[in-house]
Length: 293
Image (cartoon, rainbow, N blue to C red; front, side):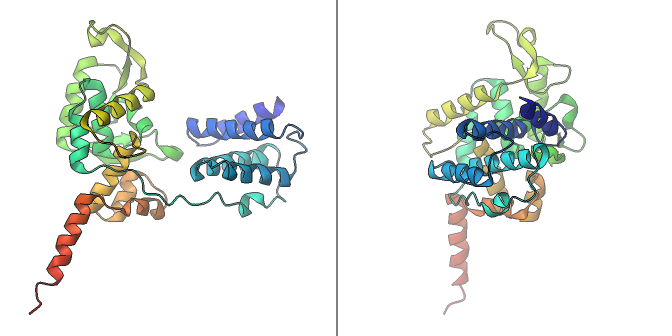
């Protein structure tokens, strides 16, 4: 019990997002629950290595294994230091090589335009127009809309990194209309209580809209318009935003800043292209042959 409390205390000292803190804690608990013969104080490096390899053998996603490794590493650096261990330097979770699910511009707007609930449509449209993570969008405050600069200030970002992102003028107009429906004192996307026949202002809560309901609405919209690509989620709007900017010729260094990435290699994963982008490329290749006699 004392180790749990110590880890929670150490996690709270970091700049990690709340969800990352929770994931680090849960995977560390998972380690000790699955190796019950050893306590946190006497578990061996070999046992930790076997557990991590077991995650690979169970076909956990590379990203999940990386989070598990980082969580356990945090425990053995901050709570029970094991400076002599090499496992965290030597163990490689693997590299995810599959393409990130992405929509074309036309598919994005077909999906967004079929959403009938205005507050969900406004949130999902904001995510696409600004390339936001779901949590970044839902935690936007009224004061985060910088109207004169036509920007949004993002302060609930991954890794506690703040940034400003541009938003089109039509997006500002949409947010203005959306805000007038609820006029919450601080939240741009507040949760709505029950009572569909009540005025929205009577249903507004002091918490952000739940992420699960946004995911449900988005997947229902995809189904309604007949888009059946695998592994699509709200996060696919962010992937699509980055891909579409690169297709439009926006320098990858600028996309890196807009996405809030630290490493350019992270942004480079969006260099896969949609069918529309590939069509443009084929047309440009045709131009290479124009001087031929």
